[in-house]
Length: 158
Image 1 (cartoon, rainbow, N blue to C red):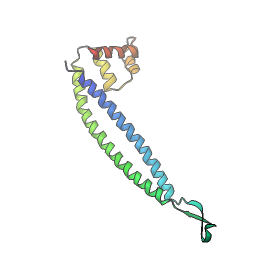
Image 2: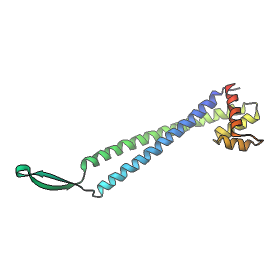
Image 3: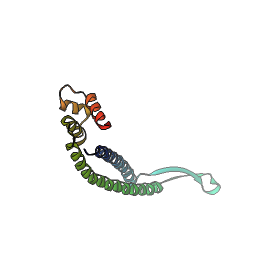
Image 4: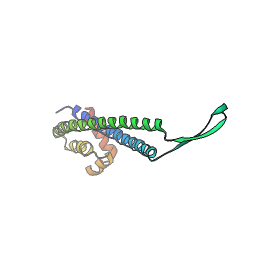
């Protein structure tokens, strides 16, 4: 029988892909917020202030203008975040390509398991990515999420 390490590697690869996807989603939301702020500044946001100066430093002056330092900072931040997003998407694609090979390894591993019930449990849980409850429902026969989970863990600990 092939090693259960194939299944462990596959599970870790799936989790890693999910984690990278979550990072991408969060970063895309951050980029959207930065772009929104840049647009607000570009559309004429004006900063107003009251300063004192002139002869004797006692005359009040109202000044207003566009917050250029913030605008420049946001543009730089946007550039960095977009580069990071591009890098994360490239990483995700590499991981997905690697997952194809791991999927083949796991399917070979699953087909080598002599116990039909365990083959079904592993296929439903890890290839089809069903919850333990959904696996139990598909298995039928009075199985619960806990019984199929325990059967899987006993199998993996052999």
